[in-house]
Image 1 (cartoon, rainbow, N blue to C red):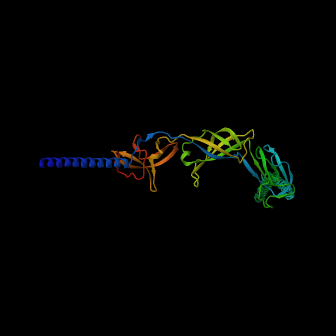
Image 2 (cartoon, rainbow, N blue to C red; image 1 turned 60 degrees about the horizontal axis):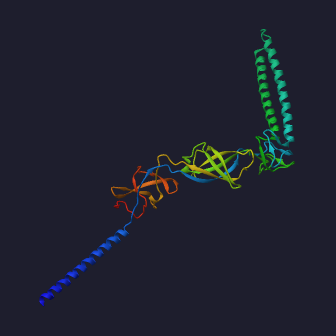
Image 3 (cartoon, helix red, strand yellow; image 1 turned 45 degrees about the vertical axis):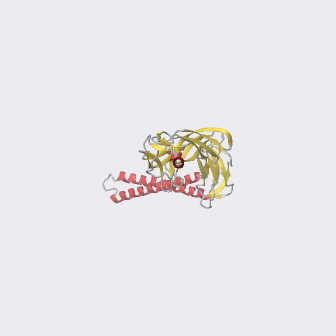
Length: 365
């Protein structure tokens, strides 16, 4: 009986030990599985040398190729207005005629003074010529008389030049009374009527007229700094106009300002637009479609691989199985890719699903 009891106890202990061992093994396995489940998984990719182009849309505004506010150059009254708002005019065409009696009087006086000065110069020149001819006979003319006659002639010559200059200036002012178009265009604004006082004697809050060249327009837009460096002169772009739905138009980049607006960090660009049919009007808005070509030499990485904290912007490079922070600057972006610039080389391994809580030096399996 003792032996039987001993054997039963031994069997019970074996079973107990076995059960305890199995229970401990299962617990350890569960802990390991739970640890592996809680452990973050990271996807590893590469930084590749690739241009990241992007199609983006920017607002633009049509402006007249040439525009001028016409103010009077001489004081006077408006005598005639020969054009009105909406009139098509040619270069040199008379737009209006001003009347200035004071200018006419000053011009008449200047003309008279110029004629008198010319007559005096003719007389003094002839007197000097005769005295000089007589001086060839010794003792007939004193040296003082000859010098006096020469000085008189020089003074009359200077006086005549001054009077003629004054006459030309007043003649030019009189020509300003006839207002002409400086170029072909359309009168878009008229603010005076016959009888109105214009010029320095009146406070001109608005121009007499506004003239615009509308058969040739400028489409003006501002390019953000990130894209301006890759934009090429002469590049063909597309644009749409809200007032003309369903139509896409083409144009070429004609001019660039060459500097960045300090407030908006952008460069002003102009596109010349032929507008012979008059489809577009100055002041209209357009949406310009641009295709950025990407930056030469840039490396492309997924957007998710760039971590932006309050202190820095970086990607996590994997070196010898450990995380290493590399500060970068982002460039152009297209879809899920972005350009990065920094101490990063082509084909470097990086963490694609990077997170801020992944500390530098952490082992990455």
